[in-house]
Image (tube, rainbow, N blue to C red; front, side, top):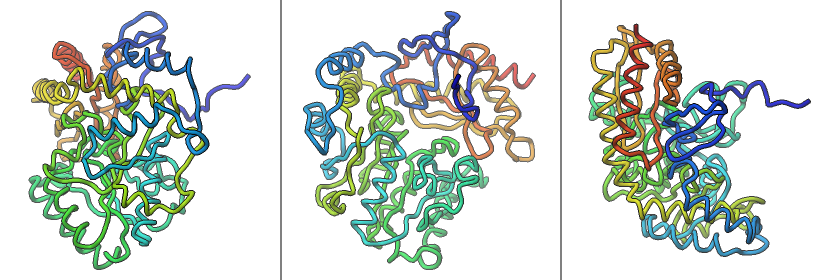
Length: 418
């Protein structure tokens, strides 16, 4: 009898039977407050009625229409609807299945368009597990270990992680931009760099928001050197940070290529990249395609997801109740000696655990994470040392549910630090 790979380990002990809104119910009937959202995927909550209805209707109409063979209406309607929420200049989209695929599609487009070989990413970024995306990933050793040699043509620059360096945000930004400038005249000559690839908030790397001043610094250097700026919005997109796209916290800035996935279709596999038509046209013939990309059911779910996000005001909800979550988590974490930092944007909040000497404390982080699950609050850990606990509620989470989560987190902290 076959079984799942033994390498697949669960972050929580829950065997889920069903999901409804922000809650999961296990096979024994116990209710769990799900602040993982499928790692940010179920943006409209579990089994939102409008998403369910759209998917059911589409399954009965057309399940799969391979988009380089035939065209189907959900795909065309989704491309048109995304124009309502994308920056106006990003008027061309290409759909795939996963975030990793979209990252690789963005890199391929950047190299084709610029005719340059190098891609520069930033320390702590997570861009996927497939070979090309993993080559851009430094969020933790588990993604790269045993995979060398990685894809060539990748270079890394420091990320302005102020808490890690013990600096102010301004000092961290100044340092990171200076180091980037040095690399552009040394290890990564600017004339050879096709793209800067960055997450508006480090995901697996520790839920560290990218300072707007750093994003603006990247935009200025990209324009000066003819480099394309790629925003990996796989986790930050679709309202999670309290703006529709995470890069919008740097007002007035627009990336050249935007990557989206996760919350795009409320749990159905769908991802995409967006760029200007002029830029997208520079992709070489045959370089964009895929058997399952732009699946009809996934596109129907994505259309319903966008309806729900807009009709229910979920971007504003993430902003308002995300601030409530951050304040609440910070309040109950205050005075806990092993909590070094509490940070976040919107519904991306993290608690970083450190020892008195400032070194990472993954032991307490793991204990707090487990204790939270014991109390019925599902969370995830992250960071290179696995010493951060992250909160990723669905975008529908109410103030009352935020308060419920904070109360459960308070109990978990007490258990973990007793």
